[in-house]
Image 1 (tube, rainbow, N blue to C red):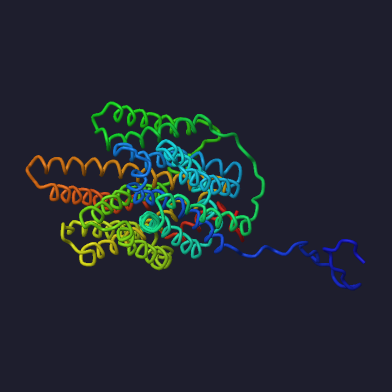
Image 2: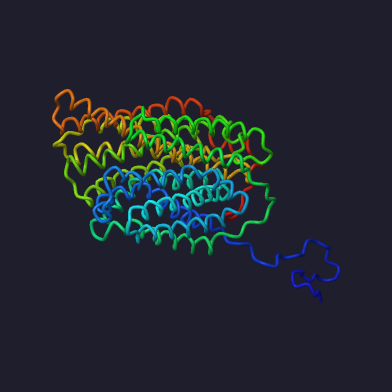
Length: 507
């Protein structure tokens, strides 16, 4: 009798063959449950960029801060989040994505609780910055886990359709949830609710995600980390400053110029260091570069549109916080329909180029429908059609672009590539919000100078902002669609065989 329990005895005379059994049964395929866990975490990060917008008036009345200070409740989050994403992605590559995923979730929940308990403006701003820091650890790890979990083209298209729907509709979901919580509970619950997401995510990760194997840990690129972090802070802060102080302000000009110089220096550093924070091979790829441009331009349009449509519904049509939030509901449904039903079926066949171009033109047409808004427009006749058409286009773009931006990436670069996706989306959103806000303010001022009534001037400002958002989406079709090649994702994966082995479960 064999002493090794993993060996099976064979009768004498039986030909020798492999008789060793695994000591442990193979782990079950939990990929789709892992996707649910990743989706919960991603939703918390994305909706937090807008959920506080609805709560700002109540928070301002409670804590007593001035109108010119309230932008920092939003800017503190976007500054920390956008500037630290690349670092968060590389830390996930170095120390384990599951580890960073858990740390990010727990820290994000903790910062949210601190924000909910805030008694002063400074405490709330600090808590929002903390949310941004931990969100920068969480978001790249979530997308990297998705990238290394789904490698089959068909399953990958479906998974990224779901993830893209969450990423694309998160802002609208944030407005909706913020309206409900503010109306029936308190603005503080717009922060406390993140604890629910975090608990679900942590439990799911501990139960479903296996511990990744230990690999080689290269040294962290400190020079690259410093230059890109400060560079992105400069750019995001510069655009935020332009919103309140104008483009000719010395702080605005200095921040933007310094940010641009540091980003250029970062590129130079990355081309010379042995272990770069962002390997340039990731962004030099034509498909990936086009997909990242698409994600950034969608961020420009999407965040600005949500901001001004919220103003229009709340101030012009006099909707309550709850009704304003509910008014956005058709858009996330529309995004999810396109991202989960249309894109998975067409992407492996026609490739990302056709879907990104089509999505850009459809979304632009939807945004142009917002030009029909007037002081006495109805939600059903004017706002609803625009929301549905815009959502369909954005669903096609986001799911296709995210899939393309992370396809064919070497396993050790998955975190950096995922961080690039989040960085382009966040920086694009920050730029779009500040840029469109500045254009809106100038348009309103010009109309008032010309003798228009305040109501007409504000409505004109909304229309100009919507037109600029539509232009950004046309650029998605022209520029991003032009960069991406025609091939299908199936062909792309076939060409990249061996870059990411197909695992049975999350890595």
